[in-house]
Length: 220
Image 1 (cartoon, rainbow, N blue to C red):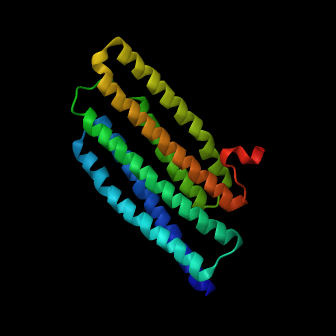
Image 2: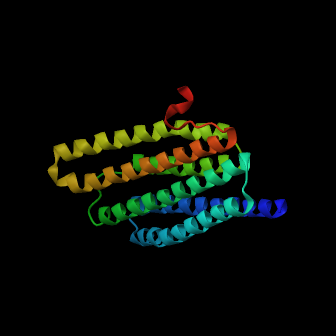
Image 3: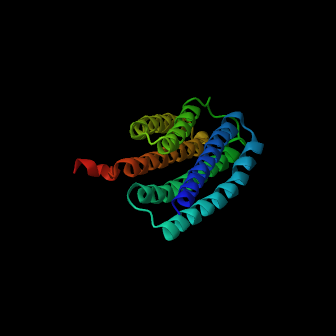
């Protein structure tokens, strides 16, 4: 029985890694579609969303199977419960990538408003946060998970910077409003991806330490 549980647990980790890799790829492609103005990448991101959705269902069903058949306790129970929450966060990250791709579809129909510098930086930061959050889970690295949480402030700062710059464009020339709003929304979607990566890292810390740090509960 224990050997079968360990095999199933290993399969769960493999599926989470596969989903994380897919999610990282759609983040990259959605931002690339915007920066390089490639409509075909938009369609690739949207097409992969269905794959991510189906994998989310598969992982959820596997988690429920592990809970029902093996009734894990202590750290194994925390891992399965954390995996279910992380699975949901990854799926929502995929949705945010689709939102970025849809914004890109609209942006590339119009002339370029400004060189895109901070948005690609945000994209790389958010993508790395997702990767490191999952690496922290697989490698049982609570220090890395904590680092991911702290990086969220950097993404927030870039998002605020993008908003202020684009607001200036809109004030100076109302004709830029539509294009500027689309880019503001891209920044917001990337900021949400970073938030989801932070949530994953918080779940990793709960799994490893049995400590809930959401909403700064550890300070209360």
